[in-house]
Amino acid sequence: MHPTRTRVLVALAAALTIPLVARTPSPSAFQERASPAADRGRGQSQSLVEYDDAVQRASPTGVDFTGEWAPRFHEDEPERVPGPELGDYLGIPINDAARMRAMTWEASIQTLLEWQCRPHSADYIWRGPSPLRIWKDVDPVSRQVTAWHAEWLRSVDRSIYMDGRPHPSPNAPHTWAGFSTGTWDGDVLTIKTTHLKEGYVRRNGLPRSDQATLTEHWMLHGDVLTVAAITTDPVYLTEPFIRTTDYELDPHQWVPPYPCQVVEEVDRKPGIVPHSLPGSYDASSDFANRCGLPVEATRGGAETMYPDFRDKIGFITSKCIAAQR
Image 1 (tube, one colour):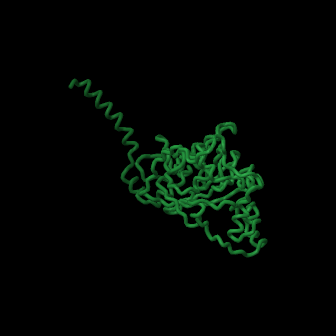
Image 2 (cartoon, rainbow, N blue to C red):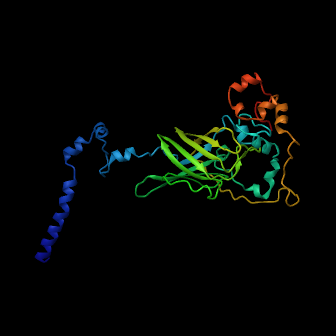
Image 3 (cartoon, rainbow, N blue to C red):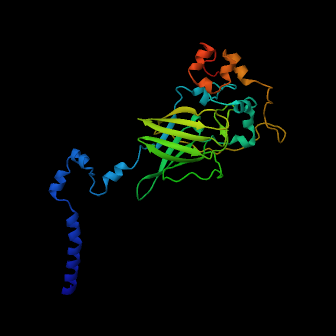
């Protein structure tokens, strides 16, 4: 090799080696960092890749909800699987408008073409019997979670944005999943959802308007996911409606596809919508008589949510311990 070229290469190698030597910790430095307690005291990482641990630890990362989650029905199987009794509005803070819509509702409305493949909306889907899959989007550079996704058997992909974006205009389109943003409160993921299409708070005709908002708290206890869902509806609810639901991690679970197909389930004339006229049928009275409950209780309302209501109506043992089918 030409002597001049050799000198140039040696000079370049020396120039590259100097910064690397300057950045390489001495053996004593490795010994000083061998103690985890010392690391915690100085806020340093065990990694040879240097970054600011103080910033990393201050960023709210929460816990990882990724996985396959199976529903558990320890307390509410009759409501969530076969469905609630018609006329059972106990413990739900509905107003007169919601009660009237529920009492004119007919279950056969779900045979209409428009209803057959209709998914549960974000506030109710937790109450369904289907399995759940949760996954996350991670920024490839910052490695921060930018969004969570939740999908059930009979639902659309629900996105929960974690990047701080604002909610859209009230005039933006409403969807079954709504528009959701999440923030961390320790290890609890708190989610705010707006822009929901009109849905229901219970599968016996109790409506929920498209002006409702949803607040959720996702909490992880070992392999159990508990979700507290709080629905606020200025149209049909006089107070926030709170429910909790449990799921358990199931690594062997698989959420199958749901290729719903619309069919003609009932032969009826075009334009006919199943319903009952106001005053023609009192489902809450029928339910109360069958179960030996006061009609005042079965009609629901905020008052029926609280323990003081039992003092008002006296001690009563229902003949319907659970929904009978």
